[in-house]
Each structure stands twice: as structure tokens, then as C-alpha cells.
Image (cartoon, each protein chain N blue to C red):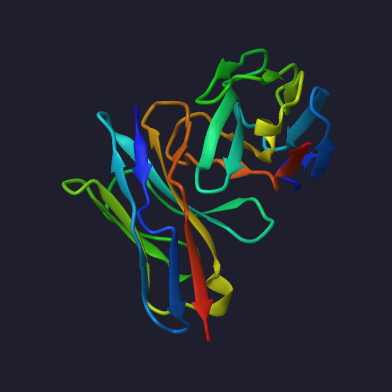
Length: 114
Length: 114
């Protein structure tokens, strides 16, 4: 059981380039999330999805787009990367709200924009 | 909106000593409370959670936390730490019925020394 898998694990981009981060979960979770982690700031929610075909903005959505075409996948796109987007990105998934509310996290993608 | 404050960015402690990591939160609605641990270059792993019921919550690896509604706190404790507990610890909250979107504190780096 793989849980939440993120690809790639590392990436270096030049300013202005685009890329897509892939998140896949095999737990049949309804909810999926993208967070970014920056030193001294904890994790901040970028976008999230409450089901296939739905997406919504989180706390820091600017410069990112997402898609949830399949229930198990949640893609995070950067159309024109900027140095301010250098960060570690974490995907997470969870069941719908209930007594076993818990978010499961991937291993992270370390992105550097130069 | 919710917010989480972890006042201690770093906590050094000797092995076998007790430790307390502090977490305070602010919210106008009911929340669930979580502690996550992040080992170097890893994703986040759930230590424990408070959803309802007993205010003393026991988690993995000998950690426990107590929910104090009047002080809006959820401090994490361990009576005797081990070198392997060296990691970053994040306190987080989510609004009950709010789709499990987590708001994180800025993290506390626990460094256990011999």
C-alpha cells in the first residue's frame, strides 16, 4: 500500500519555465490538498479538492493551478515559475470529515527556481 | 479563520529528560487538533489528534497531549525523550466540518542531545 506518492522528488526550474507536480493516492480518499513548506512558516495550503472534478483555492493560490480529473490524482501546475515559488511541496489526502479525520502526506517535492 | 502559534522554534533537551512543546490556537468555531512530526527529508506523520472526548490524548512513540479549551492550548509532552525523537513537530487545527483543511503552526525543532 503506497499511500500518497509525489513525483518528482526534486526539480530545478529556470524562472519562467512551467512544470506539473503529480500526486497520486491509493486510499480512495475524497479530499486532496497541496501545501507548500517554507522555513519558519510551517505549511500553507495552496489548493484543495473535495472530490473528482472539483478544486478550490487555499491560503496561497496565486501562481498555481490544479486539476483533479481522476479521484486518485491531484496535479499542481506552475505556469511561469518564479524564485518565490522555491519551496518544498507536499500533497495530502483524507477521507471526508468523520471520526477518523486524518490527513496522509506524501514525501514532498523540493523545487528550486533559479 | 483559525491560527496556530508555536512560540518555541527550537527546543534542545538531553536524552531521557522530559519535554513539552507548546501550541496555542485561535478559532471562533470548534476545531480538531493535531500534532504531526517531520523527520529530516521526510513527509509529515501524524503523532496524535484530538477530535472529542477525553482531553488527554495519547499518540505514537510515547507522546501525549492535553487539550485545554479555556486556555486554547494543545501542548505536546513526552516524559523521557530519545535521540530518535529529534525532528520538527507541527501543531495543526482544522475546523470541524471544514473539509479537513489544516492550518499549521510554524513548527518546533526538537533536538535531543546525549
